[in-house]
Image 1 (cartoon, rainbow, N blue to C red):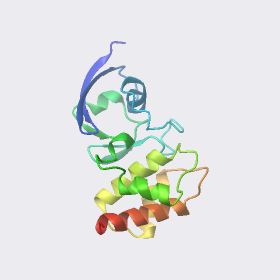
Image 2: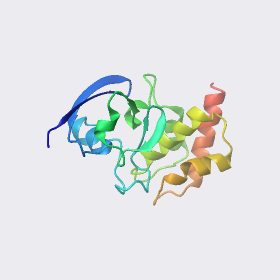
Image 3: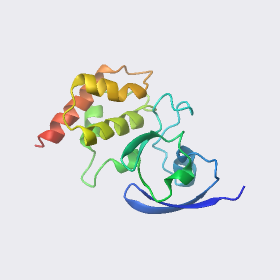
Length: 159
C-alpha cells in the first residue's frame, strides 16, 4: 500500500506526515509524530483513553483514520497546557488526585475540555453524562467529577 501525504494542524502547528491509508489517527499521533500522550486502551472506541479533538469535536482517535485528518485541526493532550503552565483541568486533576496509573487521564482531560469549551458551567449530571464514554479502572469517578467542577469554576472566575 502506498503511503498518503496528509497536512493538518496539530496542537496549533502545521504538520505534514505520511501514513498508510488504514492507519488510525491514534497510531499516526504516537508512531509518526511522537505524540505519545494519547493512550490506547481498547482499540475499539469503548474506553475513551485515546480521545482527541478534531475540528473541536471529541473523537476516539482509534476509530478515525489518519488520512481523515487532512485539512483538519487536531488537538491532543500535548496541546492543552499553555505557555504559562498547566491548563486548569490538568491542575485540578493533580490537586484532586483524580488519576492513578494515568492511562485514562489524557482522554478524560480531552473529554472534559470539549465539555467546558461547549458548556462552561455544566452541572454534575452533565459532567457525568459527558464523561460516560471514558473508563477508569483505578481512581473511581468522584475525584474526576470534582476536578472538572473545580476547573469549570476557576475558568469562569480566574484569580
